[in-house]
Length: 132
Image (tube, rainbow, N blue to C red; front, side, top):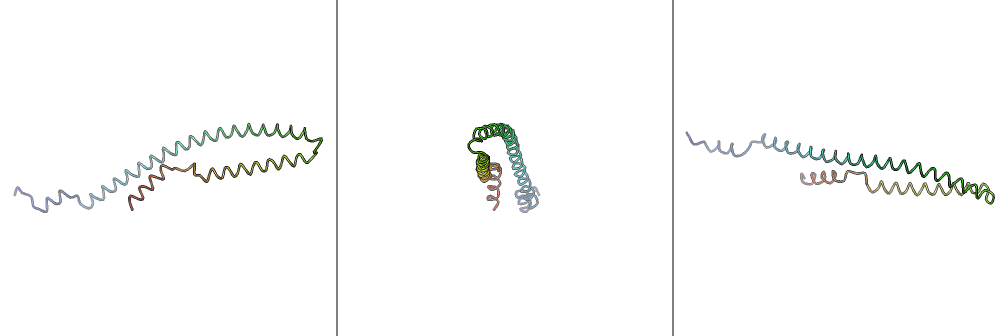
C-alpha cells in the first residue's frame, strides 16, 4: 500500500492537457505583454522625436517664409525696370519648381519607412516564424 500504482506516477510526472494549455496560454500572454511594452516604448520615442521635428520644422518654415518674402521683394524691385511683369512670372516658376522638389523629397522620406516601428515589427515577425 505504501507503493503508488504505476498510473499514479505517470499522472504526477506529466501534467495534464489542461495544465499544458494553461502554461502555453500563460507564456503567450507574457510574450504579448512584452511586445506591447516594446511597442509602447518605441511609440514614446517616436512621439518625442516627431514633436521635436515638428517644432524645429515650424520654426524653420517661419524663417524661410520671411527670407523668401524679403528676397523676392528685393529681386522684383531690382529687376522691375528691365523685365517688368516677366520677373513675377520667373519668380512664380522658380517657387513652383522648388515646391515640386520639396514634395518629391518628402515622398522619398516617407517611402523609407522612417516612422515605422522597426524593432517591434521585427520581433513580431520572429514570433510569427517561431510559431509556424
